[in-house]
Image (cartoon, rainbow, N blue to C red):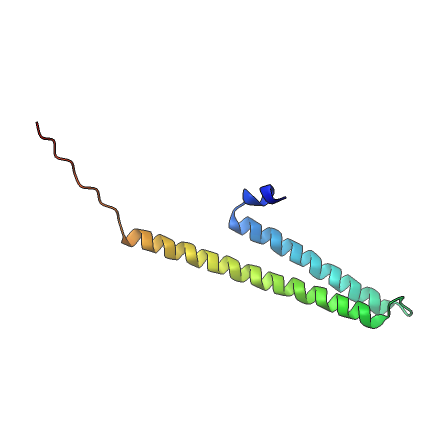
Length: 98
């Protein structure tokens, strides 16, 4: 799994992470929907409501953090590019003495 992620670009890694967070949100919403439709749950309504809400919150927070990481990564790349353009490397010409 780690070798699979090592070969990807940063934007592809973020998209995979957003997909996983979306699945977590959908699962949390499903747990909430399941808890609201049942009458007698084996662990009680409060447990399922807490689990579902936590999953939705964690998935949403994950998406926000991944988008912030991608934005910061692009800013770092632009800053690095500007720094490289400012400091151009100049080579001295060799004089041939014959």
